[in-house]
Image 1 (tube, rainbow over the protein chains, first blue to last red):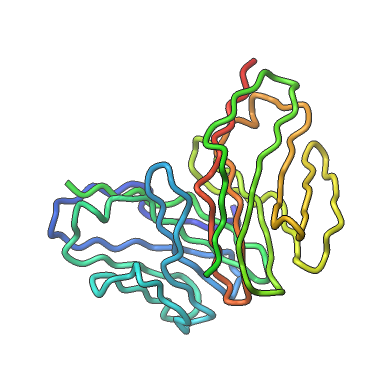
Image 2 (image 1 turned 135 degrees about the vertical axis):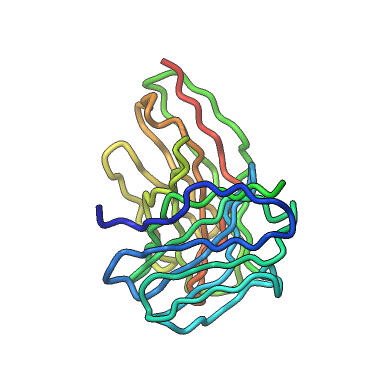
Length: 111
Length: 113
């Protein structure tokens, strides 16, 4: 399977804990994106990378959120001191040109 | 700022009926790109079609067709002869030159056998 993969698919955590998600893009894609989707809404942009450089961050990405793409391949998204409002589906996408291809998402539940 | 509006929250049809999904967008940019994505119950967003702002030609791809009209800022999407497997949430999205996608709230399509 050469699509975008994300790990884990589901994460349940207690409020205040830190969580980290991983995204592996399609291998030749140089751009990688993170989105967040809450129930009944469309995905909202969080941040994106071109190779290893993080080029834009949304205002949604508070200082508790950090994303990295250290070697321009896989990316991690870390949320520190999770809050119940962080519960959502976190989607990763990658692209080489105009179309973005999405992974299956990581569903986070903060209790 | 750009904005995408999908006024239809839910559409329910019987198999073999056609389904048209409405999308209205707002942007001041002259160069932009419009997309339709499908999100089945499994959750993964699937890319369907893309249109560039400088190309208003409407096309048909299999059972999918789209109607892009810059004059009304609309990018409507039609599924012809719907099938149960078409049941999903459909999202319209807009991209400017900053790469990020702005999505509408989605339209849930239910196709009944």
